[in-house]
Structure formats: C-alpha cells, structure tokens
Image (cartoon, rainbow, N blue to C red; front, side, top):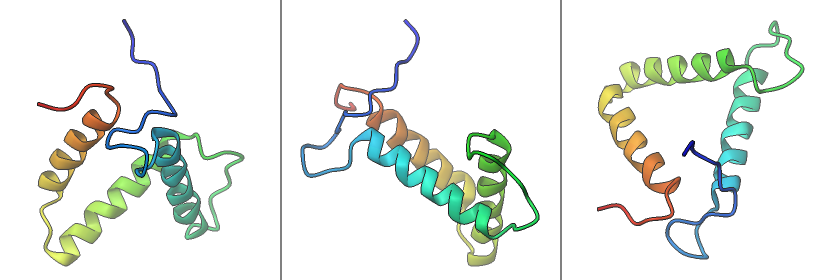
Length: 90
C-alpha cells in the first residue's frame, strides 16, 4: 500500500506538532529561504528544486560550523520515518 500523508498524526501525544503542522513549518522554511533569493521567481513553494537548494545550503552551513551533515541527515531521516508512522519506533 502506498504511503498516505496523515496531517493530523501526532507521534508523541497531543502536545506535540501534528504532521500537518510539521509540513507547514517546512513550507515556512522554504518561504524564508526563497526570500533570500530575490532573483528567483516561483509562483509556489512546491518546486522540488527549492528543497534541494535549502538542503544544499544547510550542508554548507554544517561545513562552516563543523557539523557532520551526513550524521544529521541520518538522524533526521529516522525522526521523519517515526513521525510519519502511526506505530511507535522500535
């Protein structure tokens, strides 16, 4: 069965953000990132190249700060996988 986004799902209880709220935070991050590029013209923030640009810029920030980008992505992917599941992670 293909994955179906569950915007109301809250992995860690009612006091934590829902997946819909998490997605909105991501959209807001894209809008802020887009504002740093006034020469880019997009009608919407659905263009996946915007996400690629943001992730690439975050990788450069990690280089500058001495963070291990690959480790951060690994842990972020694990968090994301747990948050999009309605079963508790093992």
